[in-house]
Image: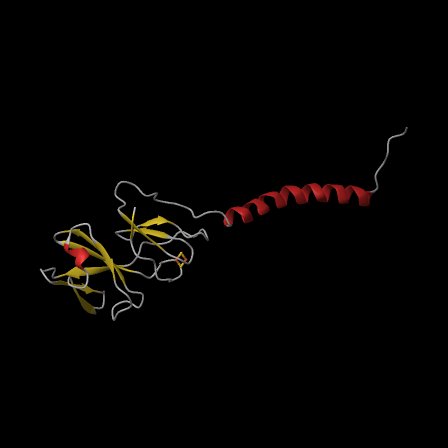
Length: 162
Ligand code: FES
């Protein structure tokens, strides 16, 4: 049998399938990868005591607001906004933002914060529409974080013990 010659039209059809396969392969792969699981950047370690997870795209933050896991959408995000905490005494403490707005928080409403290592939270208040996450780091230090997720602003969940 003689050698079969292909037409120009057939040649283009065959090679375009190959080129399409080569080019589309990585594109299809990247589409699947963008839908994959959340992208951990600072996996929880021995310093991670509590995690707050955002219900919208599963970003996770530790008790000091550090990002433990980026959102499932793949972007890298910033830590939670931290407020200044002052005047910690037997009964209360003050949380202050950059514009010197402040609220006083009473230990009688957040008794878990009387112990070092305790956590609590607030709902929306005059300082932060999404409320606060609170962590008693030491006798003299309380961490107060905005619950507003730095990805797209959903309120993050309460702290859960690791
Ligand atoms: S992870 Fe998307 S808004 Fe929080």
